[in-house]
Amino acid sequence: MRIGLAGTGRIGAFHAKTLSTLPGVDEVVVADLDTALAERVAADLGVSAAPSIDALLGSGLDGFVITAGTAAHADLIEAAVARDIPTFCEKPVALDLERTIALAELEERSEVPVHIGFQRRFDRGYRRVREAVAAGEIGFVHTIRAATMDQAPPHAAYLPTSGGLFRDCSVHDFDIIRFVTGREVSRVFAVGANKGEDFFTEAGDVDTAAATLVLDDDTLVSVTATRYNGAGHDVRMEVHGSSGTLGVGHDTTLAITSAEEGVEWPPGPRHWSFMERFLPAYVAELTAFADVARGAIASPCTVVDALQAFRTAEACARSMASGAPVDLADVPGLRATAH
Image (cartoon, rainbow, N blue to C red; front, side, top):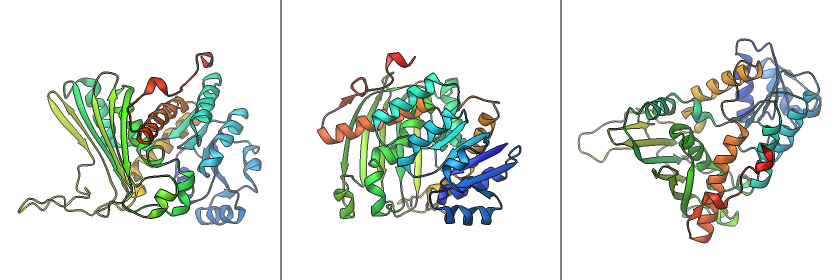
């Protein structure tokens, strides 16, 4: 297979390296608006570089990976689908809800598979909890706690195009909650605060947020996020059931120091970035995309899945702004004509 990749920044270079090692991938070709960057990455990895993204799309690809800037995602998905190229795209698929809906409707009308990069779906811990919930291993689920805590904030220039903390960060929690439980979110109430750098307020964002979600089976979920977790990068989920509890992220890397006397767990070392935390999951998701591209499996995370997570993020942003709960029924989704 010949796989093309658009966007050779940090995650793009990482994905290109991973793709080049996968069985059945014969050639990886990269491109970027910064052609010199694409050529450097290609030389470092021993892969090919195309002179432009348009040239890459027209060069006879078996699969296309989008790791370009967020603003380019929607146009590149549309261009790849128009050329019948199976596509992988990092989240989010678009900057706003309306464009995300349009892309989900395009996917519904098309037979071209699109795989969205919610890598937590390929993390062993989350998959283990999903299997346990589906099998009734922990009884009925009544409470879930999910947290995403970055060790340090991104650069100020990133914030105006990020979509805000719920859409950029907590959206991963919103997707994995659906994945683990098989349920949809019905109602949210969210709050946020900023105790850090002024550039969060200047960008209309917050550095810390919390949301309470009610699922469609009345499961209660708390979701928290922060850009300031100096102890380390910390991503966790606890799923509490009537006959047991399972936790994800509660291993030796957990970024917590116990206040209990004589307790030395967890011993570390801690993770300091999302790429450290989810390295095996990133490899697993691209392995799955190679299977999608060759037609062996359906997309394991569709644009429709991404839309559902984005709708929850949108509801949380609206709730935080208004100070009132928001029903998901009041947030636009797929229109009936799409089916």
